[in-house]
Picture (cartoon, one colour):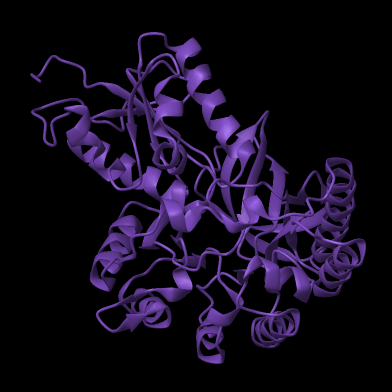
Length: 420
């Protein structure tokens, strides 16, 4: 590549969890360091890379749709499918017209090499000037990967079986570089970050190091399992830089369903964890995931989940209908809940989720909170508070990546409308 050649334009796209977002950001950093231009998925690109998800059949379908959409937008672009769906069923994705390369989780971080792209380039134009890539506000960092729990419904241990932990010094070095790059928030992600351990440093120790060795204004954790939450871990939230937000996987509020799911806790233990968090962290948001219609779920068990979620008063609930995944134990379980009943239960759980979120937001109407602004549409900006409230406000200014105090006024869309 010489001085007058333009580097290829690369569009990076991702589905699914925050771990997938962390990996796509890691690839973006590699591409930028190598001198390639990053553009948005809707822009014209020479290469389109999709980090796929396969946690449900809907995620599979979305992955196929995005690859076909990319083909229609840019018929000459090289299409690359990576990630969990690519790991599980590479032949399915390879059959999609235009898909040139399919890389599973064990190969995807070698993307540049496998694409035949040079790791280092000559003198080229800066990737930041003239790039159509969106300006970033929050950084997702993968600190851990791999799971061997084999919950009955979950395909992830089959797709991310290799246990990996990023050394703490690498994590802190990256956080420091992100601070220098004007990021205001880092989200630590992993398949099961509560099990993080590297060189004798566990998750609590890693957080302590980040707080002591970096000036990152905000540090947020992705999903935790209830049994990984301890009083000493929660005690770290005395540092205001830790976002008052815990995402605790629930999946069901029925002990019978939890047992069939092979989860490692009961509802009583989960309740105690939430109580510990709320007693220790002011204004904290506790969010969760719930699976509706797991095989054998009775009407009584569904109502146990509904009642438990109502009791927990979650700030946000992600609701999923049960999706049988290949090779998992639940895929062959009898007593499937009829589709019409699953649909009705999902509707009821979503209604509760909306009510619960609105109730949480009401506690902060009239208060002023710090908001990290991320994006806008028609001069209506949206961003997040430390406790994960989505805030909207109108402004003609470019607020991208700014943190400002905002007074929360009223419910709006899926969050709250505020004013400066």
